[in-house]
Image 1 (cartoon, rainbow, N blue to C red):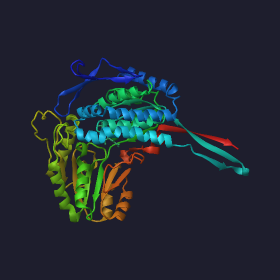
Image 2: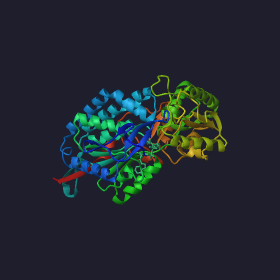
Image 3: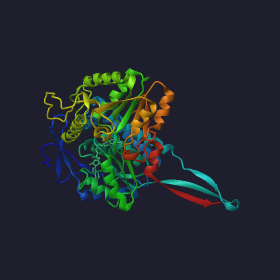
Image 4: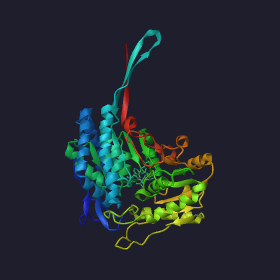
Length: 490
Ligand code: NAD
């Protein structure tokens, strides 16, 4: 724990006011290992205040705010994020070390898109009403009224902080809920900046609260075990999802979980090689491999195996590791030294399992004051099988293993041989095959000849260890509202 005086302070936001606590930790800059900020940790009492404020806002001003007004506030928030766009970019890149160019195109750009998408969704959502025929020729009119779930705990990770946060906060507020947000301890800044924006556009006090801290015995646990919450929406690792499920089980709270992945690409011999290599390069190395959707297993039909391997190696070598504000940078550091230790342990496990490392495999020397940062080399292997741990466990780094296959059924079986089930991609110029194979993938999202292309109205989520439920468009309404059915005998 550090002293809060020397560095920028990141504060909690509770009941419409920023709150400092006696206790801070130092947020480390992953680019060079220096101290970036002092983050004020919320204790159980502050989490309790946040939940109570959210309940009071739900029962008070926010509960009385009509849907059209909520949608208008969300659109205003989107406009205001765009006005303060570069501030969000700088805050996000400072916490994560990711390139400015990526944050502008993806992370921060998605925040206003999330607010607008869910303003549209709630504005368009109607009530279902239908006549039911009863015995004796009588009829009844049924209609379902969607009510907010209530006080929603929102817990998010560090890899795409603002994007993943707004993906949950926008539908929650659109549906009339109030939220208590627990950002990752690694990326506290943009959630805090968002508090300013929501306050500026007129979202009432208590509707959006931020409590900072860690998981066990800290704000994450205090929030999920609080009896005043009505549900938990969580993005993060499968192990944490499982821990949260155990915490909320005694009170039977609903959960929406977007968890880890061990995603496969299946590349057929008829694939367009250039397009496939470009797509695979993104899907393996984007955000330094720290996207839940990233590909860590690449199955390639044997006739083009060598071409795909050599093409990917060439593209991995062309990646430029560097400072976020350098336009030539394609690849930032990992989020922390701790995470780098974890990824490096898989680099060692791959070698112990007999893998051939085609490129990378270690820690680069970059000079320029960067070597205190959590940098790692983009890495590709051959020679692993689905039995090896680096093929079964999520690594969450810039690495993938290439494995050959012969027939279509074998490619499908290899891709589906996992406990995870988040995303997959199929690469082929035979579109009939593309459709056929894509829908046989045991995943929530199956792409053909592309990756990470998202329509925000489509369902997002995973099967198996990758999660519970779907969010996106109307699918989000199913989690963030509780329908009450009214049946009137006519
Ligand atoms: P993590 O599970 O370690 O932490 C996520 C959040 O949960 C953090 O805010 C953390 O403080 C909190 N937390 C940890 N333990 C907790 C507990 N016992 N109770 C309450 N809260 C707790 O995940 P991470 O390392 O921050 O993120 C990486 C993981 O997130 C990867 O597994 C990745 O695949 C996954 N992820 C999934 C998606 C998706 O949409 N499926 C998207 C992004 C990331």
